[in-house]
Structure formats: structure tokens, C-alpha cells
Length: 291
Length: 162
Image (tube, one colour):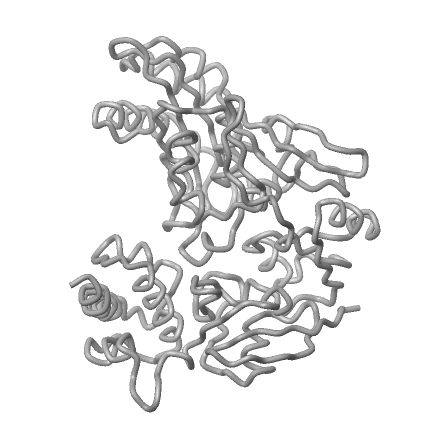
């Protein structure tokens, strides 16, 4: 099908985008990469009065390091994340997560900010942001605010953004030296995950880990940071006992639903399997020096 | 109400200027406004890759872009490959390896292959299949398609390096 009629508006600045969103009083959608929005328009699952194209905005396609944080502009495309040496070095989890997204064409267009605002509960970008405790910058009529990733995702396709707010930047803690891994189960490569588990950790003395952070995707209405499991793993060597305890803690945090892709029971079965798998990969990457 | 926009694009080296509706999909713009029917419409939801074109040299799915988004940009469609009655090397490779059956997906595969060559990567087997995952062939003739692309990449990128 083709999209229902709408007004196409090009925003040259963030302020213009906010003003346009205000003008359409919640009945406009922002267009970034369009890889999720345009299918919804084509299928007429969405019929906004206006589509505000953000692609001509300048200054939102940066990847910079400052003050212990890596700042990624909302319009940075997947293919840029995939090839950025800075991302590979400082946000290795993001680099590991990107290849799971879509296909080459999708990754050439899709953006980090677009994926986060779309807020698919199985989305890899949202999972990485929550796992790493990223901070999201929103600009709206009342100015700028920073929203922790954990508060940003409120449910399936639902974020904390107000109707006239635009996501402009995502700040990650500088993960230099960290090792990261993503394990996910999907029916086809590039399809939405049935269960996706992300982990990042910083090697400590000996075989120990200074910290480990685990995130769970596809197991609740929104991506979850597994706080208890992460706390259990800090300072351990990821030995089998610690891994099992973490897997159980993850399972206790999860609240999977049954949907067209898998039953809740199947998802519960997969969670500990994939937590163990992702932690094994973390250890292997550290040993192999592939981060 | 759909808005109207005057857009200028360069397609296959030729400049065009047209009025389009804001909701006009790029693939429909190419086919119906410019008469370039080589870019095919498959799923219209970004899955099949039949509508793959090059946007400033990068593969994109033209069913997932609005025509006004292409204003000021440069596009290549399958019509831009062959020159002066001669097949483009990628088309030659597809012919030699029998890389097409019904041909519906072929324009998309050709452009994905050209973009790979332009990136200068020689891939084969599994890693090549991963790069081509955004193009579906419903005849399921993947074996020969992958062979054709392997052949093309070896010839083109290999000789550029050599």
C-alpha cells in the first residue's frame, strides 16, 4: 500500500523541528532513517497529519568523546556505527549489537536516534542503551533535558518523549578497555529478536572482572538492565557458579509475553541459555583479545 | 492533504526536476514520474530489496524513502548500469553464472553487488550472503546469484587491486 496523505515538512534546525511538532499538536511524526516509520506509513498503520523530516538537520551526526562520555548524534546511521573506530574502541557493545540490525540497505539508512524513538521492545539499540546506562538528550519547547535510558523506554513503542520533543544525542559512558558481546535468538538473521541478551564488562586483575553489565531484550515490554545479575557478577571471574546465579537473577527480572514469534514459556527457557552463552563469549573475547 | 514539493535529482547521470506529493515513495517516483521501470516494487515494507537503488553510491530500499527526501541527491538505478549496448560487468557475471530465473529481484541484486565492488571488498560464501541478506529471491536461486556476485567481485575488485 501507499501512505495516506500527509504534509511533508523539512526541518533545518532542532528548533524548527520542535516548532513543527508543536504546530501539529501531537499528530506529526519525525522521520529519521525511516526504516521503521515508512513501513508503518505504507501499511497505513500510522496516518499522521505531518511527517517532519530531520535528515537535513546539521550537527546530529557526530561521534565525539568528551569528559569521560562518548556522545553519539541521534542521526548517526548504523553503517557509521559499524565502521567507526571510536565506537569500536569506546562503546564496544554498540559495535557488537549493530550487525544484528536489519540488512545492508537498512543499516545504510537507519539511525541510532530513530531506533531508540521507535522503541521496539526487541530492538538492539534500545537494549544497548539500557545495558550501558546511556543518557538521552531531548530538546523540546521548554528546553533541553537528559533522560536516563532506563526511564526513556516506557513500553512497546512508547517513550518518555513529550509530543513536541526531539531526541538529539545519546551519551554513553566511555567504555575504553571493556569487552562486549550480544547473543540473540531470531527466526532469521536481521529479524526481530525473540530473546536478545547483551553484556559488557571491564577486565580486572587476574581473571576477575571489575564490572559486568547485562541487559535483556525481548523478555519484557521494554529492554531491561539486569541490575541484580550485574551486581552478582562484579568482581567474579565469571566462574560457572557466578554465571548460574546471574542467569537465575535475569530470569527472575524477566516478564516475557507470548506473541506471534514465541511463547512466554519458550522465552523463559531461552533466557538462562543465552545469558550463559553471552557471558561465555565475554570470557572468550577477553582471552582472544577481540574485545 | 498531501503537500507538494519541487525536487531536483540526478538519476543515472541525468538531471530531472519534478513536482511530487510529500507521500510519494521514491520507488514510485522513479517508475511513474521518471518512467524508469527497472526498479521493482515488491513488498513495500523494506523486506524484499527488489526496489534497491544507489543513493549517493550507497544501497537503499527506495520503498522506504519519500521522493522529496531525494531532493539534491544522486541516484543510480539498474538502467544506469549498461552502457552503449554493452552489459555492465555485473550483468555479464549474472549471465555467465545463470544468476537469474524470473528476474524480478535481479535489479536489486545487481545494485547491491555494484555497491560492494565500490567499497572494494571481495567477499565470498557466508560473509557475502550476509551482505546480500537485504535482497530476497523468491525463485530461491541463491546459489547462482552468490556465484555470480563472487565472480563479479573477483574480476572487478581483484583487477583493480592487481
